[in-house]
Length: 531
Image (cartoon, rainbow, N blue to C red):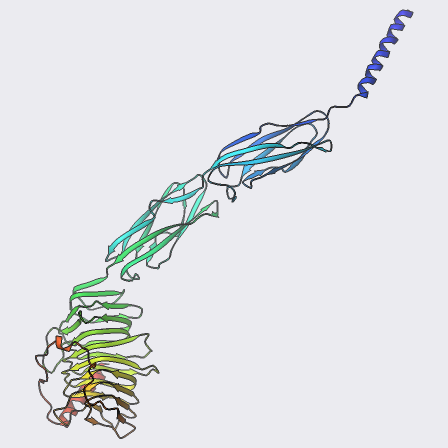
């Protein structure tokens, strides 16, 4: 019995000694591990995601921080603490990040552990993926409409590259290029209708640019531009009926005009150099009427623009002429057999009046008739030739401010005449032919009893001898620096190219001042009633 007790005590003592020995040794610190040091994301998209595990072995506490060197990698937590087991860290991608590049991308995640309060060596995890920018790609970088005469449409095709949600908007830098839509979503392929609007496009070669702006998940991407080319040929020739312009027009070549043309505000009629416009003879006469719009008829010395009546009858007119209440650029033109070659009646100051080098031939009432031009900046007319007008070369009416220079008045009857009051006229460096009868005049105020306060000044002019209607009711004429020989640069400069076979012939020549007065009075009343 004593032996059993001794053995029991002996084993108990050994156990106590071993237990004390174990307690006297240090406990091993815990360790941290990650599930993978390389994470393959594959294709990087806005929905790409992955995970990795952080695990702890051993007793103790591990705290950590996680940082990414690239903004396109987003981690679910940037720090944590593990006392046992594992933690799951999620990874997502941000495709709008500026450091996400086309092609292969690698980001490094740095995990810094602190074990039982002591910093430990970093652990790195590589995150790899392939990124393809989602955008749209056009089939061409340039579209050429070619030469068009009417509205034309083409389609621009484009497709989506990438897998993200894509929308786009599109704008044009020219108002004449119309777009089929302003914005849309793009899943695979799409097309955009482009239309050239000939109502607003200028003539000739034109260019435009459309800009497509893709948006990936609502974020605007790099814009894409497509260049547009078109040549708008708006020329008309042949038979043209009377009409009111609804768009800009260009005439060229031989034209037969069968009705009056009205050019409204904002639109332009352009007549190309060398054009020949023959106007049908009808009653009342056909006019080209600039009603707030613009007429451009600019020929040159080798390409004179001709505007003439179909049939000319002596002592009458075969068409109305050009009536202007708007803008006009007219040069190197031959205007033949019109009632009044150019009639001007401006109520609002025009933007541009440029009239020079015009031959007025066989007009009935006048080559130029200015109804009113009451603006501080005078109407400047230059290098005009008046030939064989039936009644008057140049008529001005009320409140006109006009300068006429380097012109020639070869009409045998009345040259410059006032049919109104309160006008200021300057005639400079111009030539006047001698008169066959003394009741024909170079400068005159018609009916000076009622037409008042007209100031007409001539300077450096040749041949002015016959005047009438001045010296009463405020009508005054002065003639200074009289030229002793003809001014060599006066006139249109091309009158010899258009020989006049009926020069100085009249259907019925007035035989007295009274007869001439009656004709003037009759035409004046007709003109007033027609307005």
